[in-house]
Length: 272
Length: 156
Image 1 (cartoon, rainbow over the protein chains, first blue to last red):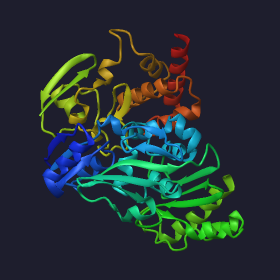
Image 2: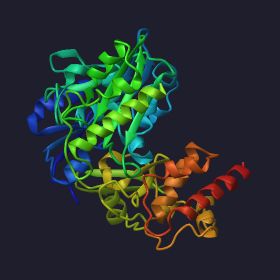
Image 3: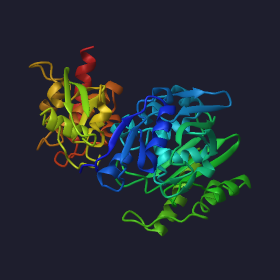
Image 4: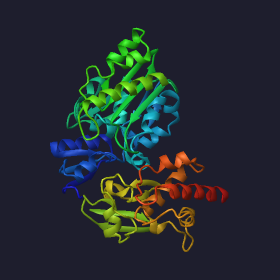
């Protein structure tokens, strides 16, 4: 399967990438690792006429302790998250979730920014970032703006990113080296989660987020509220699917996904 | 567009379309057909090669993205007549049957052992989750990788 023809341009800086996408218009797309975009292009579900390769912007690949938060460059690969000592110490949950994305080959190419910008509700990292109250820094022709993760995911593969904006940085709360769990359910190794549940302790509270339980990654707010009111893990987990609209596909019906969410949230809460 | 790589230690440059996938570049432009196309959807891992010493699925990478990189395919793994320890281990432990997944499996294993030189059986099974084999049931593949790890550790 060969993608439809396109022009390829390599950006040497973030500013150049934004100028290039402004120049080429809405049919242009940024290419990072390509782990989501290239399969879509091979199936001709995506047919950009220009690809702007931002994959070599090494100055956007970093994990830094920024005092009250951890700052992650958008082009940091999953492999680099998985092996980052800063993340292991300050935000262990993100390290652990990154280690469960795809397989080794995918983690050698895929980037956190690519995963976030793609906005797939079945992806692992967006849910973890929701649980961590992440902030996304978006750079456009008129400057940069920050968008909270809770405001970022608008619908299936739809985000707050304007066509001419580049996601440059992800900022997450420090949640420590322990006190988290990621329960990912799939039938075959390396597959997407049929349902996933992330639970992590943040600032004395417990945050819970769900993978593949709707058209976007979701916070399990009913579970969080129940926990804050003193409910047990088992009782709180019964609220896991409240307010969700789980999809139906070959892997699972909405009813089965509801069941999975409740079980996985309970397991995650019991593990932290 | 011009795409140049160092392939198995030797410089290559070819004029290809921007949409050329790395696996096509290797097989068609460079003429090295040891790298196989299996599922063509980045699931099976048959097309695994090393890009700057890390395993990647060459069906899901543009040749343009590899421009300037150092690439190792199965043809470049041996040192002259001397097999790489992973190749020897697959041979000695019967780590293959039909052989279609083998090139990708061997390169994925080389990358895995580079990252985890002394793996447990679980490390090997998890580390090779991106490579499918429909013949062996994986048993002898895992055995081969563990044996290679032992040889390579011993050689240090």
